[in-house]
Every structure is written in structure tokens, then in C-alpha cells.
Image 1 (cartoon, rainbow, N blue to C red):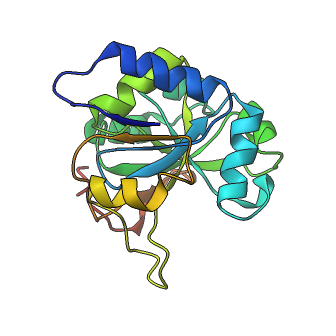
Image 2: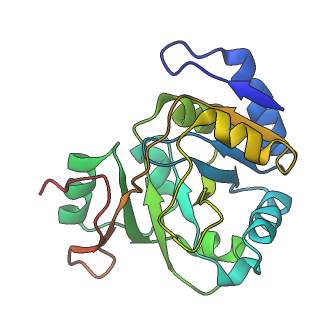
Image 3: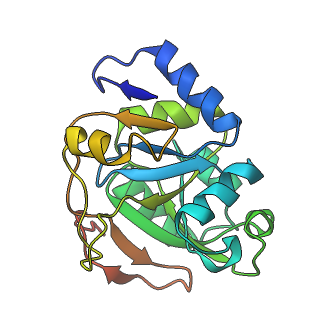
Length: 205
């Protein structure tokens, strides 16, 4: 199924279709404020297993990002956040950043892992935010890479995404031209700010 959404005028009937698909354990290609992503519902075990299978590995060995639609939801899935770090988040989110934070222990259980640190995102993209809002829980995600030796090569053209993946994915959500620069990754789980990967976001402190 291919759905084309206008981020300026979102059709709620299409959002309901997307949410129903994710609740059934499907994985989907969706737009974000950086590169296109492959996502599933965080609270669906079938979806998490399918996302791991897409990456060709087991669930406990992969590093996914969690995508939220607001700070209230993010706070429910993390350990208590230091006040200075929370101010940093508020200054830069929503935006093209992935912050490495300590997840709540229940999140680690979902990934069958003892790993406590995970990437957290609140993208500045109305489509993905509306999906999460209607879904009622975060998404687990990984970037949609091109199948090349260059791990920083991404799809930007919706037509190319459709042609490449229409047979592989049960749902592709197209929301315009994607970016070819990923999010900036900020490590701050130890209470210190560390830019792990400089991407699209320019950090404001």
C-alpha cells in the first residue's frame, strides 16, 4: 500500500490506515525531518521482530532510535533526565537530532537487551508526529539506506522509494522529497554533551 500525504493538510483517514497497519505488527517507510525511515510500533513485538529481520540481525543486537511526538511522551520512556540536559532537549527539539539517553528499564525489555542507552528523537515533521499521536505510543526506527557500500547514502526521491520498495514493504508513506543528511547524534547519557555524529542539526546550547 502506498499513501501520499501532504504535510500541510493531513488526511486523518490516511493516518488511521497507517495506525491500523502498525498495530497489526507491520513495518513501514515514513518521512521525517531528515532522511526517510523504516518504523514499527514500539509496543508491538511482531513489528519489532520484523524490523530486526529487515536489518538482518536479532532484536537484542541492533540499535534503533525511538521516535516521540512530544516531551510528555518522551519522559514516560526515559529514566529521570538531568535538568541541564532537559533544557538542552527543550532548546533543540522538535528538530533533526538524536539524543542518547537512558531509557526506562521496560524499554530495554522490549528489545530483549540489558542496554540502557538509546537514541531518542522528536522530529519536526507533522506526518510522523500525527502518526505517533494517533498510535498512542512511540515508534522504533532505523534509517532507510541505499543498498551501497556508502552507509551514508539515502533515498530522497519519493518516486525512487516507491519503485525500489513497493514489493518489499506492506506500507510506504510518502511525504515529499526527503533529506540526504541524517540527524545529529548527541551523547548526553553521562551528564556531558558529546556530538557523536554531526548531521543536519546544529546544536544550540
